[in-house]
Length: 264
Length: 335
Image (tube, rainbow over all chains, first blue to last red; front, side, top):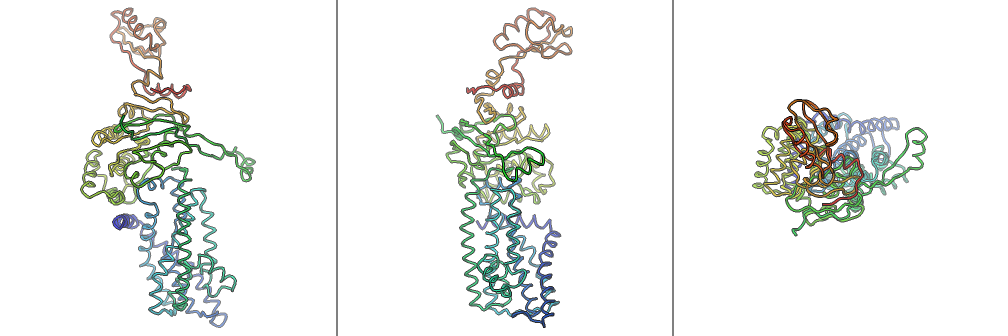
């Protein structure tokens, strides 16, 4: 399997190298939203004497920088790709090879992240200096962040696949995934750090999977939670990952059976 | 009896499709209630294919050919019936089975567009776990047979349709499958490329002993490659037997072509021998019933005497036979 992954990685990197400009544009696009929210919160915080809850302007900057990084590392766009593959029959050749189609997507996902991470880091350093971000990160946080962001990436990827698999039943996955993205927008920690959400909304956020993909690893990296809280949050990530893993296996099996070759 | 490579029994596939009339009212109605209809794409077909055979799978558009190939390759679950290929139930899609077969669709691509085919071959080598020596041997053989030397190092998107099809063939066969399902492998290709692909398929079959089930709208493909054909129409099997016997079963007439020294005789002269199909430049084509063909030919030779330069008696062109089969709803005939 390692050899298969290496071969897929080489092929994907070659393909990606032909779209360097696109990679850069995607990366810039992914930074725009957090920067807008950062700017908004900085304005609000300044209007309220520089502090909202436990966050001051420099904390907000650190949070949104961490969020941008996590967002890049956990991005998953399977739902969109997969619908296209099912509708235009591009999935068929993959289904006919002795390798689960998910592996191609894993590699594609890794390659996209690999190509974006360096230019993104440069942009984030620049933003960090501009906003004078304050990180409360300790070595323990860094150590916890690594598995946490991996859990988050796996969770994002698998939940994306569960959504994508609905393409076997409907050729309009877009509406499902758009609904999902809207929910993520509210509950994942994009509008505001989870800690600043009003009580009930915060409770809902912690019960739903969205925050475990973005807000949780971002707060761990920023040093916004204690290591013991971080471990508790990571347990939440693991539970959601397990749920989506089981869901994926079931939905996939049923989906392939259903696959009526829409355009295949 | 040898173990069949492909063994299909009463295979059926029914698709449920949504129907609606055109126009605004019908469109609005379809929001509330959809009218669904069951379409029997494959309505219970049975056949078997022995090792090493090349079988032509014929039928007009929508006959159920591709649906059958998709079921046999494991892409589709059947609605009913059984099929075994190499002893496997295809739609279970066990890795062991997937490694032994290929489905090549002439109008579909399975290569990564942005990279050269050689790199896609490497990925396939790992996916199919082909040992290096066998991989090299397969690549060399396919490169030679398909003349790929110049093509494998260019990104696939820079190849012409014909070039791409050759590379697709190589990609589909790189794991040396024992069974190949070829769906319109020469579609859209120019004549010389069609001939090359045909030669390649025949040579591949000869070298590897692979079993091949092939659909094509080009009868030349079928005539060149298949001794046996299976004809289906509206999901049902119409004929399964030697290509040579298809004419006898399906077209109860022969074509007599007579060439005359002194230009064509008036058609009225010839009506008593058979139906005149065409007449030009001293060449007359007559359609006569199969049973009376020898007698009519003898009469023609006798009556025309010295005026006759040449005469031949042949089955009608295969396209014509097939067209006849599809336009007249015939009952199942099996050889």
